[in-house]
Amino acid sequence: MNMIVLIKQVPDPETLVEIAASGKDLNIEPKFALNLFDEFALEEALRLKEKHGGTVKAICLGGPKAIEVLRTAVAMGADEAVLIEDESFAASDGYDTAMALSQALKKETFDIILCGRQAIDRDRGEVPQMVAQFLGLPHIGVIVKLDVANGKATAESALEGVVEVIDVGLPAIFTAQKGLNEPRVPLITGVMKAMKVQIPRVTIEDLGIAKDMQPKTTVLRYLPPKKRPAVQFIEGEPAQAAAEIVRILADVERVI
Image 1 (tube, rainbow, N blue to C red):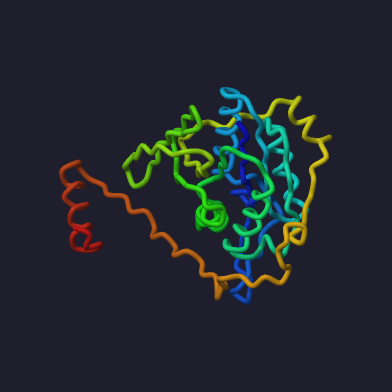
Image 2 (cartoon, rainbow, N blue to C red):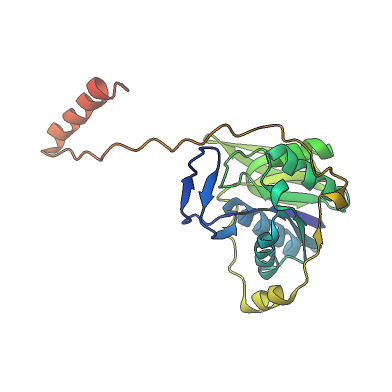
């Protein structure tokens, strides 16, 4: 069984991010990591390989530094890794990203494609569905369990408090949700291997995509999130505190 995992390099969760003076760009501290949800996808691919045999290949679209997350994938146990290297293209919208990844995937042989449900930097959760559309493959999102047998897969998809069990023929694309598994910590032998491995790099032109391809969406401006109100402590006896909470919810917040 051959599995491909689409991964992305994103700003580290503790990275300082500020809106630029223009309002149209972000100033991001140069600290990066493997996207959280992609870790679940990679771990699931490795577990399927251990159970059924086969190979795991990681593919990433990004600038030169994105090679670091591919080395993380190799350290965890991926057999191969490929970087689609184009910094400007990687900064484009989800449509361009999905187009580039799908063109790369057309050159591959696979049974399963796994990726995270969304990237934690933009939180759009749109690329996997577009890749599935470009390739004409079925897509099952936000999975928390995946079983494979006899050329078919049974996945449990969790969304808004409901778990849906879905059967699908392979090949297919799955997006990983928190709870699917617990990603492993790379062994030192894996880290040493990843440091030495030569990771192939391809360009947008190698995939037959025009460098000047126009994105479908444009960022008009970034807005900071609304500040949360200060925490209010309700003092007094339990009955009095409960009555005060109800009063605040009804008269002040007007939610009941």
